[in-house]
Image 1 (cartoon, rainbow, N blue to C red):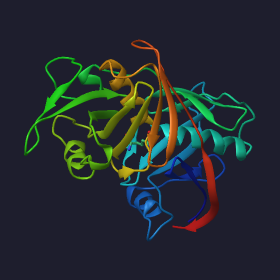
Image 2: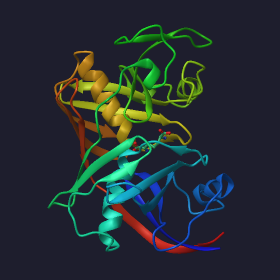
Image 3: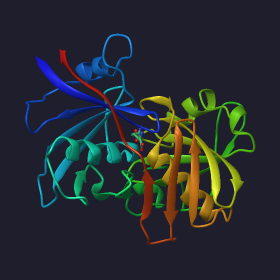
Length: 275
Ligand SMILES: N[C@@H](CCC[C@H](N)C(=O)O)C(=O)O
């Protein structure tokens, strides 16, 4: 099978994007892992599939982690999705509505080329994250082999644990992040963000992503970190998030309101691969 693909990135969080409307795409877990492999395939953190919407939206957006698992949401991917459907003439609309596993999101292409996405409302009820806890709380103590750690837990359509640290460069992202990702209290596993407050409108963030490991940036992770920081009283409602791959602007007006994310999306190259 030959597949046309586009390699894209949003702040260095990289994607293989496939048009499932104009070519037949039917991949199993092994094939997705191979496409994502940086030595034997194209290489990416996530594979994004553009499909016809099933309901009223413009498109259906499916997301697969590098480990082959399908997931609910991807913020940097949402911006790349918009850039892709525009550049490939699949739509002319600057605002589109796209179905994801966690509901419809509505990205908008700005005149300056950036993309703003309404990422929906954060979810705090433990059973909806899902996270095992007796009740909903601002922070939770999570048991780890050495000693417990304090986390915020929430969903941006996908599950996130957020830790506040004082020195992002020394945060145990690969070691502790991997333990939290697989923790028994997160039945669907979890993305783990480490946030350092620079000031009330600026944070630094690193994320150990579920199914992909540490990436250069995570859009939903940035949304989750800002929501957690606002809830903890550490941040104002509009925040610049510095990741290893660049900057995102996140704003959230508080409970019951959606989170807005603005940032870039870039095409790197296009090609065709034999599977
Ligand atoms: N990179 C993404 C998130 C991709 C999915 C995530 N790893 C998960 O398993 O939920 C982003 O930009 O949000």
